[in-house]
Image 1: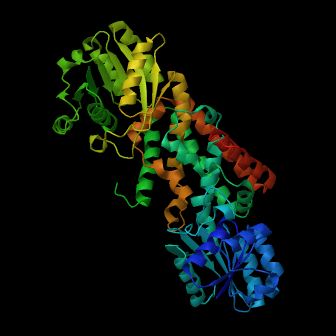
Image 2: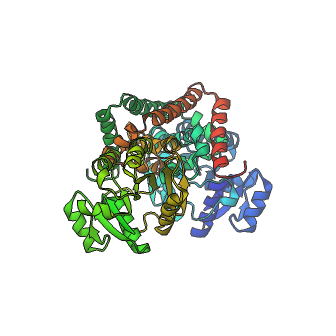
Image 3: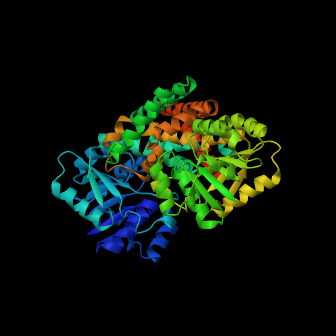
Length: 280
Length: 280
């Protein structure tokens, strides 16, 4: 089939490379930077540029854009998309995107499917994209209610062919609730952690624990601001939750309450072991 | 020289193995579990058991015990320790230990030096100890004011011989302030992170960021309770600091203030890049 990819950044560029490497599909690519399209053509990451006219030839459109840009693209191109085609997005939030685009897709006779490839590296852009980015990663799909199972299956097979080892089917709501905890909160905490005044003087004292806690502090603030504000209820709930739990440790320490502190720490250890499937 | 090691757990056991492997010193070892002493002798991690009588033969005593046990040991054995010998501890807090033991050492004619090997693994005990534990790690030393430079140098050389690549000289106060940030806070945050109600349902949605943030949640609560309560002021300050910073993100998200949120995230990214020596 013809696969059109809009946005040849880290995710879109890696999608293009992985699809070209692992499947026989024809890949058409578009990026707002013309030099990126030329580069992608040159190294064979795409077969052809995806022009406005070629949109109608695509059986699958993969949108690798920020949430608002994803919504804007589909809204402004809905009339050009092939009847029966599938449009898959790659945004880190799903409710905002799916709720907006599912009715538009239905109205225009194509299928919109929410997708979130759980993969990334510290650096953005086509330059850092690679065909192995999705190896051993999870792909979350949030198909609309009533999506034919064979359309979900088609995307699942493609995902597996390009490296994903796990395709998770979810709802936009469940996705956004869980991702607030498993990814967004991690970025907020890491970013807040590094801002301690002590951070500037810890050289030579830094344990592995510090390195782990601050690894994702170096984030793309433009992208994450949009993602966070597209998931404000679940994320604020997670932040307020950890604030509340941290306060309990602080209180126990100030009150020198060894029993309370030990109990708090034990609960965390046991929870971690439970989640990791270890006995305790 | 004769080196006595008290406590053959992860740290003490690794010290014994690393010293035996890399130096010509005679290693005498004691553990409250007799089977551990026998095991250490059997595999050649120590040359001889360290009996009460042999304490006086040791030129260097390495205490690899919890803080209170370290203090108790020196207090109850001060009269037996050789004149001019050095006693090095391995506790993760330094003020409590050094302030208590430096005067006792001075009174009895031996040298007490605070030490904190910045190394560890998830599992405790002699079974998990290994001669390579300190490879590429930092050793923090907090010698008392007036300690002869050659005594510090002697310990520094030993540390380098057994794998440490960096020996940092500090004061007990500076150590405890920085360690509250670079290690203790990481353990508290990781432990608090995993207790989100969402943690039990994130399977298939877990990004690398989540894994990093919760890696040290599985901690030994008995040891960390003692370490935290021996450093209450600095640690509570760090916890309250991150609570305060997290509240700023939460407020910006609830108020849908994109500019404020983006600014908060940018500050964190820039701080991280500054610390990592990257340009931004």
